[in-house]
Image (cartoon, rainbow, N blue to C red; front, side, top):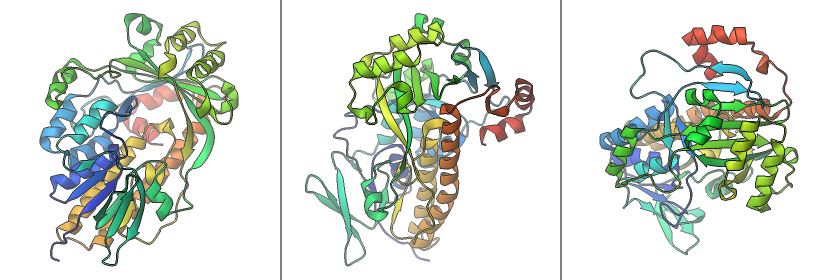
Length: 426
């Protein structure tokens, strides 16, 4: 087959969309990203993100060698494993990460979302257009697509990729009945800047990895720390950052999950004031360990956020066209497995590879997109279901030992690497 020349429009400049753009640009495929944010820094990028081996592999595929080295050098201190504890900080289970040789590419990492955004935007100044709020698309007589934006501007492309998140406007037009479902669970919490005093109150296992507090009541608390390594701080200069940006200092995350009624929230918690949200957190931990109550008091009202958790529904195969989707735009999932960003990166790398194959004549374009969509549906919707199940376990009524796993059984699992990997991927 001869080469097929086409250009790609990506609607949405989040982690998945920018990773795809980097991969296509690296291969010489024309690509443009349309992002609704006014500037690269006009919106908070959230907290640290756990990049797992599949996410790391995807980034290695899509980034240039120079950017990969910067990414690799700017991670935070990371300890594998997770601990489950009661609200009185009694340890229930501890899951250790793999020990032994670590793959330099396909491994776990703790990454600042702010820094990752800088990496993914590097070298893309001419390809990323900010303040472009997508409204609709239309197919033109020649088979190309015209994209229309709120500011009255428009653009054309041969291929459209929806990477515009859980509220994707592209998906709403392409699949009008595929909106994610409200799980009835909210995520509520914030962060506390790290200090010796904060670390003195934290569970000692937090240095080994995140701690999930699972009281008998229908809620949960995830605690994790973001601590930039010394080498990472030095590498920021390669991104034109002399020091960590405001809001990206070392900190601890406190993320609660539960149904609104447990926290005393109304059905529409988005309308609550920061002070009311802080009071809701105080009431939720009234009977918890004093150290946990003190940490909640340290969360600034201005740092507290609340989000209703939604999850996508499995979708039957659809007829492939030159419009496709990735990440939360097609398979939004709860945060309880911590894999949403990694699945979006996996999407980006796979779609980039298939589009590159089509561009250089290795297979027809629609066949390449179909191969991506078939594979993506299988692994992504399995991840959606696993994340939903994990959420229900975490915020439901609980009986100990947790999840039917005894401490003795867990010691056996931790002793056998293959069992650890199987449990981690379950």
